[in-house]
Image 1 (cartoon, rainbow, N blue to C red):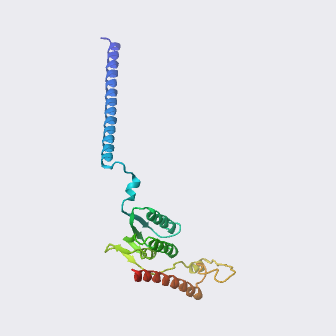
Image 2 (cartoon, rainbow, N blue to C red):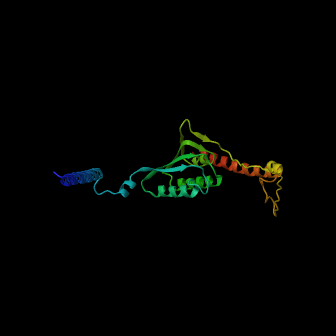
Image 3 (cartoon, helix red, strand yellow):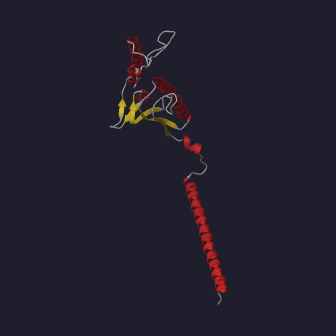
Length: 236
């Protein structure tokens, strides 16, 4: 047998093997698709069999249930945990006819007292409007400062023994760079019109009257914080 004939035979054998291989791959692919479709149909049949006839998702929502609202992260106007977002979630929960209770799950170090006060007042307003629907605050890792302010509006507060809860207080923090500026020979030139327009400027020396003023503001917010918590504690 010549070399040319041998090459022709080899190529035909190779072609046949390749076709068999490709055919086998196609058969496996078809069977794979077939079994996936069968499993999907079986799963769908199982779901349909467990789902009561004539019912819908709206029917399930009408059944008694507790609405879960998450308050996570720092509480600020631009954060996910802001008053508008929490208020929208509360309104949706109370609007649902099947809601028999609201769980406010909190994991937050606190933040803006203004945002917290908005949330506190909205919870109190909705509780008064819907007295049968109780609100429960559930604290996980952190429920401090402004977060505790919000939690105090709930009918009951639950926490893990290891949770950090409380910290009823108000703080203001900042930095002062006057010492550094003196070392490098930089002068601060701040021109203002109006009382306290350069209030606690970090590049200017701290003024005793500014410190006294900010402490009055902090004390005022702190007293409101305490008053709101005490008011709820007395009403429970």
